[in-house]
Length: 150
Image (cartoon, rainbow, N blue to C red; front, side, top):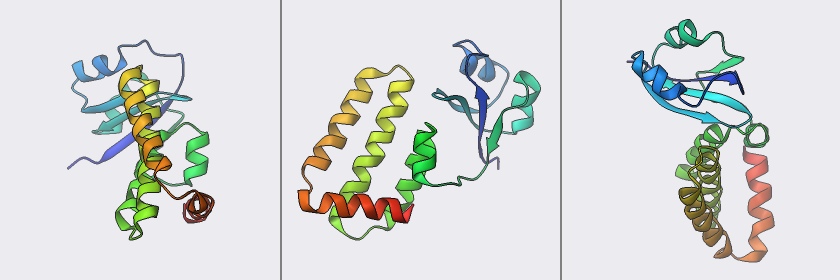
C-alpha cells in the first residue's frame, strides 16, 4: 500500500489546474494546496509526480518539526496532523477543546488558501466559539502547554 507523501514546489511555476493534470496522469492526488509553497499531497509513488513536473524543493513522508515552525511556514495541514495526535491523547476537557480550536483554525487556513472562503469562515467561527467557551484564566496556560508540547 502506498503511503501519503507531500511534495513542496516553489509558488508560481504551475497553473491552477495542477490537481486535474496530475489526476489525468493517473496520480492519486489527495489535494494541491497553495500557501508559501505549492504543496502536492499524494498517496502514490512520488517518482511519478517528479517525472511529470520535476524535482520538488523538498518532500515529506513523515511529519517532523514543531507546530510553531510548520505554522509560520504556512504548512497548515502538517500542523493539523500534529495537533490531532495530541488532541486524541488529551484527557483534560479544556485542553481537548483548546487543541480542537487550533485544529479548526488550521483547517480554516487550508480552506482559505484554496479559495473556499465560506467554508473557511465557518471553520474559523467554530474555532473562535470553542476558544471563547474556555475559562479566560486557563488560556495562557493552555497556550504555553501547546508551545512546550509540540
